[in-house]
Image 1 (spheres, one colour):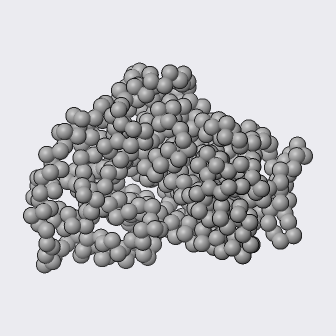
Image 2: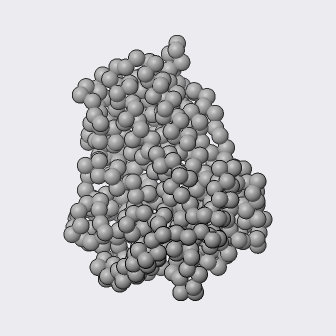
Image 3: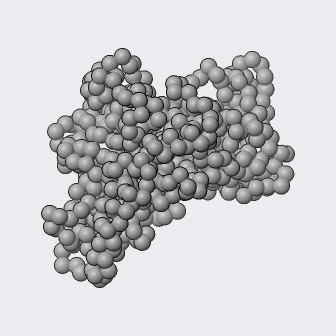
Length: 520
């Protein structure tokens, strides 16, 4: 959606990084808006230490009118086709959460028949209904050099260097007319009706605006400190509140690059491991209630091995949760200022994308087109309801990864399985799913980030037991045909796609863009 004359409304974005510059790029390049100013301080670093994304990022980037090859090189991006979980169910298990949906798009008809097969030869659920697990394990890319930008045979997202991605977004946003101001906010000026009037910078400059996007990160300078939006903590269900991160060089130049995120469970948390072209982004997310910082660093160093001996980890401290009111008056929070979850399943950038798309739908017609204040406030209430519901359901999905564990070796895993720490809606669904497969009626699709197939991959990847009892399901013959078709397609899928690093090398050679091998 665009508007013919948006320049009469001055939009001010506070904060750079991924949230701020993605907002600037989206407004200026996708919505074709003018009159956008972004205020950031070069004295304040960005939080990102390496980012994983969700497949929605492809349509977002395509909407910016950029080439995929240029993005891959400029952001030091690689392809991500899902997450490999190690040790989450028993400490010795492994399973994939692939991005491909089941063959045919509907897995409700297939799942009961997979559950009814109790033979030792039964493949994993992901392997039974997609070819992507085989593709991932073979180290293949999700697409071929000749495939169009942002599309390919496999569903995919990206890993990238957060600092370089922000730099790239800054460049294309400024080229589209966004004004960048380098400065720190000293005060926020308010109108008599409570709206924000302007940002007053430390150097005395005044930056007025009609509408403000708070992308100030954990500080939440506008939505929290100025407008007083309360923060809803989710620490009672999601325990992790700290992370240690390292940028680890490959042991050998040209080493294979995993086309997935590796998430390995440990005594009091889990490590992420993402592959970029010249390094890995590795970090340990943990609960300070269940281990000390020194113990966490020892765990991370054991995982990284000798490659990390000369590296100093960066610590991040955070509170898991979100603001129920993310749009107040003439201000919308986007990114960390709206809420934060640990990087499990890469919800961070996806939530930025969701907020920006709703801003595009609600802000343009209700604010920039000159609608009355009551229309703007109604839009804010709708935005807040939808975003709060989305955050709430993400809590349920993330908790699912922990609460059905069979690990009892540490207090961390025992506490995670304690029913008292499971949100009631999730407890109710789990109680039903012991006796029937998940149903589409368990989900409100417009509020969900993770659709039923994702729940199925986690549930049955972790060995969740659903007893069908005496229930009988039709379509057994058709299900057998689908399973057979998937099995027969495995080899062809592996053979028809290039090696992951080889495809990345192709894009780097094709663009001719010089990319630094040192990530900031």
